[in-house]
Length: 138
Image (cartoon, one colour):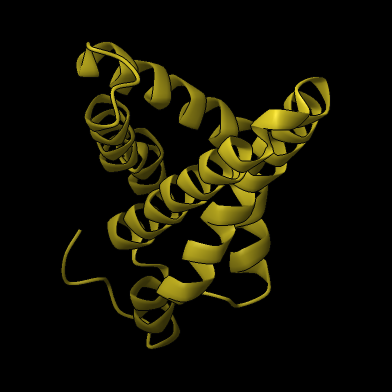
């Protein structure tokens, strides 16, 4: 149940940050609509890549916040880099903008990975399970 809760809640801070950045840069005047759009994109990225990346991290014993941050970055980098490479090929003058957008998506993925780590705390669960106890919080 904790994993489902983390799946649903972890992209919310990243979606809010993405909406604030988009609104502050003059991209879109309605930050709530943009936040919902980012949230849906992050849910899709989690379904397509994030679940598999999280399973890989846990299977290989990588339970640190840094591992989850890099996992979140990979989760958003793969689809956004492919799309931005295609978009930059269509319009070569937009290459610098594509790099900025890629960095934004890397930050959003990192934030999603960190939120997932914080909500599930896999290292704490693994440590208490190894000692035969139950987690004290959660």
